[in-house]
Image 1 (cartoon, rainbow, N blue to C red):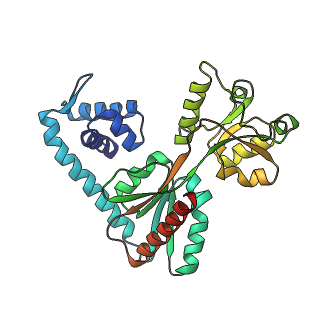
Image 2 (cartoon, rainbow, N blue to C red):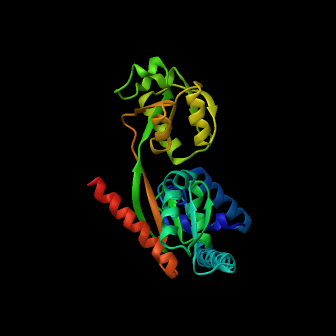
Image 3 (cartoon, helix red, strand yellow):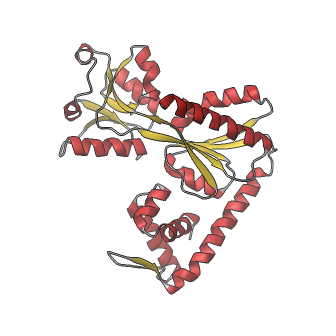
Length: 302
């Protein structure tokens, strides 16, 4: 038995189903099913009575649910205590995705420390799907991510959004398309640089391709989960790619790639997550600093 299984079981019960729990945990529904099945096997009992139309706790499931919540809470509290042991009130603990860390957060940290010189940051970078688990395990007051965290211990604020664009090498045949949206049929013809991970942006792009080009198989020249390598590969003429507009701005300004809007792609939102209680004075100042930036961003979008 591990804490991921316990967390999945509690999420299924709290959310009332496997698909809602999968969304909350940022896991596939099949992985949620595996966690529940493995937990039931280890315990030697059925926790959930499931049909194609309904789900309810078994008698053992109702008994175990309370203990599962207690075990998760004790694990979170113990991890939080250990993480805090060697820190003072000026330490700000942040978990962020690579994208938000690189393109949104670094400048904010520099600016805040100019205003509050005693502030110190401990930052962990991980995939979007890991954010909720790390917050619930304890030790982090703040998160920057692209999923709307569902946990009553944390407040969630949307602080921006980002559009996916298509980037191409800066070559005459692509320059001839300037001022247009990207012709989606080229995805069935041109080599493509794509991500190797199952990120939210990657999933949205693959859904888009499936809808726009049913039956078309991408010619993947390179699959890698590193934004800088993707941009360099495109600039070098290896293929085209769908990528965050913010991440590629400098490459576009420098003329290394050309960026095209992609009609039909839904922008993905960015979220600032902050713990509701027990913030130190320095941590509270950082929360207010970010929220001021959130309000300023909202005012610009109106």
